[in-house]
Every structure is written in structure tokens, then in C-alpha cells.
Image 1 (cartoon, helix red, strand yellow):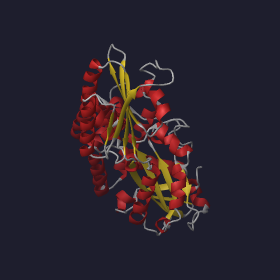
Image 2 (spheres, one colour):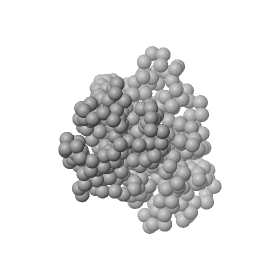
Image 3 (cartoon, helix red, strand yellow):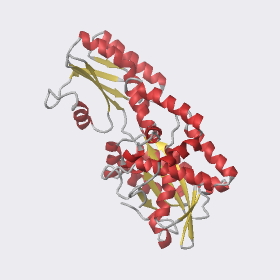
Image 4 (cartoon, one colour):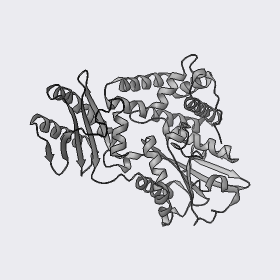
Length: 400
């Protein structure tokens, strides 16, 4: 496996920044740091979304690479891979690759899809395959051409957000909490105590309009000192906060709440400094999350558009915006495996010999069980004519 003992040099990070464009990198880093310095959940979300960029900025400072964590060293190696790839490409493909990087450093985008591509290529090289970046070099719909012992396959790398399978989007939840929090501070000062606001959102929350409407309802409920509020878009209920061990400290409270409400609940804790008062908000959608369903929808779209069907195809899916507990649950309950294997019975799966799934846990080298043991989840399609080809086995054999 690659990255067992990853090593990179400080010059590699500086070369990557030059590849990005020094002026663009400085501007982008300033934007990210501004977002990450703000107060509330929005800042925390920004830190998570642009963790790769922030890590590279830290590693670029003199002496920091020698003190880097294992995950940071993996990031530095992938940055070096990007520089080496750019140097190996002819002028036109190199410009295309630089355009991809510039797009990743703009707006809400990030470097994750590019690093997923680079890591996928490194994984296949470590398994003994010759790897070519056919998407960049030749303008092919897929990203990578891999070959071993005279047998070739195509690899298409896809990145999707777990929010595609959630009724309540995490970004919108963070926006709601940051809107409500100042009002909760004032309300707690006038109503000291420990409270739990439980919210059921039958219609979910995935738009600015839904955030604004729920904010209005919470504000109205608190101003009117009501304990319940019910509408088609939300059912709100305010109760005393009662937990096993009622005096759970505020430092342990998030873990205690997560254990009680489960991985799908959206949670936020507001405290009144010095008073011991606490206001917890817990929200659930009207339906269970279906992240595995979002993955198979992406597979259905990608298989006919990104694979030629002339050679065995591998769809390599990166699931973004998922935390350790959620990712571990998806694997342990075999939701991704079950959904993917059902999808493989569809006609759309005919060109696909295998599907792989990974998250930031695998990208950053987090230890199992939070990450998949083999560096990715891999599911072979038994219906494909090349499913038992021994030359492809290292890339397609199921990992679970």
C-alpha cells in the first residue's frame, strides 16, 4: 500500500503553491482564514471543508513539515504527486490540470477531488499497475487508464457530498445555529436553566428560505415563551434537558448527546458563560438519511457518461462531508455495500467491473475502524465478463 511511511520535502509544498499560482494561493488562503476565524458552527465547517488547504499552508512554513502528523505527511506527498504530474504533462494537458487546480481554489470548491484523483492513481501504482492520466492527456471521459499483464481498465473518479443523501444539509444547519445563537444567549440570561429544543423537520432543510423560516419560528416560540410549535415544515418542542447523569459537564455534553440521539441527529449546544445554563438544539429530518442512495444515483449518472464500455470500468467514488462516526456506521451496517450490489443488477452497471468508495478518513490515513482497512471499500461486479480476470484482481476484488 502507498503512504506507509510517506516522506516529502519542504520544497515540494512550495512547488505545489507555485503550481497553484502564488497570488491565487495567497488570495484563497486569506478567504479561507477569514471564514475559519468567524464565530460559530460556520467557522468550524469552513475549517473542515478546507482542511487540506489549511494543512498545506501550515506545512509551507519553515520547520513545520518536520513536525507534521501522519495525515499531514500524506497531504504533502499528494501535493508532490500533483507537481510531478504537472511536470510530466505536455503543454495543453498541463494547462488543463492547472485550470482544474484554479477551479478547486475558487468559491465553495476545494482540493479534495484533485487529491482523490492523485491518491487513486497512487493506489493503483502501488498494486502493480501502469497508470496513465488519460483524461488529462487525451481528453477522455474517464480519468485514469490502468494496465497490468496486458489487461487494461478505465477508472473514473467521482466526488459527491453526503448532503446529497441528507434531508437536512449540514451547511444549512450551521447557518441556522449561527443565526439563533445570539438570541439564545439573551434568552438564557433571562431564563437560566438547562433546556432541550427538539426539532422534527418533515420537509428537511436544504435552502436559505427554509433556514430563515425555521429561525423565525424558533424566535417566535422563545419570545412567546411557548413550549411547543407545530407546522408543516417543523415540529418544535422545548423541554428541560434531562440526561442520564443530569450534571454532565459541558465538555462531555456533545459526546453524551451524540450517544443519545444517534449519528443522524444535528446537534448544537449553547452555554451562558458563568451561569451553568445550557440550551441544546437537536434536529432530525422527517426521513432517514440515504447517503448510500446518493452514491448509487451518482453511479447511475457516471457509468454511461464517463466509461466507454470498451474496457472494464472502475468507478472510484469519494464521499465528502461525512464524519468518522457516520462513515463507520455506513460501513458497519453495510449500507454502501448493499446499495451498490443492488445497483450492479441494473443495466447501467454493465460497463462497471468494480466500484470503490472512500472518504477523508482513508485519504488522511486515519486508523481503522474509523477508516476502511484496505484504504477503500471495493465491490466487484460479478456480472461483468472480466470480474474474474486475475490481472485486474488487485483493483477489483471486493474488500468486504
